[in-house]
Each structure stands twice: as C-alpha cells, then as structure tokens.
Amino acid sequence: MPRGTFEEGPAAQETLRTLRAIRGEQDAGVARATEIVETPSGAPKVSRVTEVPEVPGVAEEVETEHGDAFAHRVDGSGITTSAEAMSAIADALSFPDYFGHNLDALYDSLTDLEWLPAGEHLLVWTRSSVLHDADPAAFEGIRSVLVDAVADDTPSPAYLSVLLPDS
Image (cartoon, rainbow, N blue to C red; front, side, top):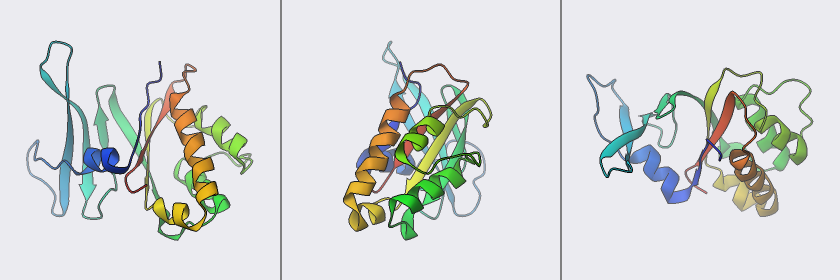
C-alpha cells in the first residue's frame, strides 16, 4: 500500500487552506492549515499541519502522522513545456545530474529518492494550470507520472506525496 498521497484541485486547496491556529504565536503572514481525519474509533485526529505563507498554496513545513515531511515547491507560473516542468521538479527535489529529462526517467527518480533523507517528501506544484493551459498533453503526461509515482508501493526510506492545488 502506498504511503504517499496525491491531491489536486479543491482537495489540495482544502489541505493547504483549512486555516486554523493550532499552537503558540504565529509568524506574521503565516497561517497554519490543519487536516483533521477520523480514526477507526471515530475520534478526530490531526493528520497534517502545513505552514502556508501569504502566497496561497505554498507549503513550507509539514508534519504528518508519519512524522515530519520535507516540502519541495515548484512555482508553475512560468512553466509552459514538459521540459520546463521536468527541470523544475528535478530542481525542487534535487535530482542527481544523471536525470534523463524524459517521463520514464522522471518516474524512476520519483520512485527512488535515495539521495534525499528518509521520510515523506511533499511536492507542492502551484500554478500547474499554466502548463495545463499551454500544453494539455504535456501536463497530463507529467500528472500521470506523478500519480503513478505516488502509488508505487516499492519499499523505500524516502517517499513522495504531491499537491497540485490549482489543476
């Protein structure tokens, strides 16, 4: 069973924007988003806490039920090609130099994050709709790889979750 999650559109927006003060003093311009889930016994449980700067949909720091997660951001406002999207994802996740810049290589890299610390790595791609509008086929190809990579159940110390809040 995959450990990561893939959320897009309203579900991803809700994860990022259900704003609620949850602890102590908040930094100016930062709100905390909390996702509440129901446990098997019916009791509510905090599943994810995300710090959201004033730029909507940008995660800085994440705590999940599995522990701390590492947030990696892609600002898609200038991404209009598949090559630009792959490069931005590769930069955000610090892909090794041998990354092949094609969909197969993207999948392979996303399912084997061996160069990153163990734990959950949350890729937050804001404004992904820019690529969708510019090149729908390229967007669908990359989106499909992201969905498949999150669903991959190969045991690995580092694993992927993805949020596309505006797709």
